[in-house]
Length: 377
Ligand SMILES: *Cc1c(COP(=O)(O)O)cnc(C)c1O
Image (cartoon, rainbow, N blue to C red; front, side, top):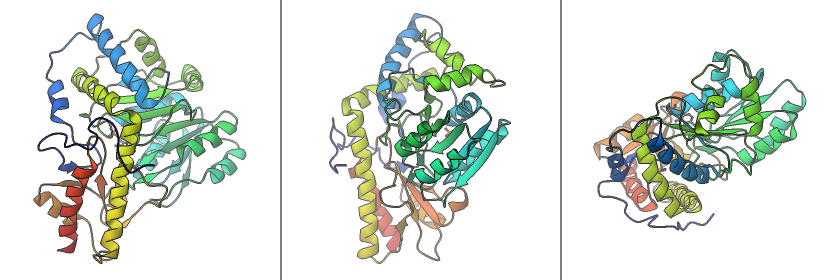
């Protein structure tokens, strides 16, 4: 991908005071999006909500690269991970695990009373489509759970290739958590034939938390129709039914939707391709900086994920041998910059830079300069 970001003002300074909060979720929200939330309430049945939902739908379809309805749930993204499982898994899922979030996706299957088989690779690596193909051939699996961008490790799974394997198999649906992917990392819901893709508002969409979004294939909706004990709140049939009429099953997080309306206008201006390029450029700038640190400054930090499989939205850095990350994250905070600590069992040996949402290469470079000071102090 090209280094240069394109699109309207993609790398221009976005707003004064913006660009100091690089947590990989929730991410920094532009002041104009926060302000958009101040509008008064509207009824969640009737003309006003229908007009709003209709507008949101058009923008969301572009974000998900789909012609299908994008379901909107008032929940965190975990809610739609649960929806994926409750509606999509018939009996037994193959959980592809390569980090903390994919591990949680697999555990969720068991907690819904369904069976799971875990296929785990070391945290930081991605899954090999051939190994998945070999396992599916043995039978017994009717769904795959997979995380696109593993926010704990910064690894980007080859979703298109994994989907191809799932689609070759006999009646295996692919359920994709793209929470830190969608709107930052390239993804095509329809073209790649993904059965369910989900994200949340507070990652690469750079909105306040409160909303989850998902797209289901026809095959997924057939599974949903047949699913027993799926409950009501995350029943995809309910979303399909009410959203056909531009409303939601229950009262939605209206304020977050107001912010989304403005954000979708901004995204349309930048274009999704421009957004993907800007994120890739932020990843590349981070990797380049790490190379400099190692080569010129003698600081032994390294990128956890392998080249070619690095997420454009989050980079997980391994600390030099014998050092832990909490003092680094604390020193950055003292300097007014928030980074993510290591996640789960990677808490001490790693830390994370969430370069997603409305951050820019220019803003990121400021952060890396300060980080260089901290690491060489
Ligand atoms: C943040 C995240 C989640 C959980 O999202 P919530 O909105 O906190 O429920 C799940 N998966 C991935 C990959 C994430 O980055």
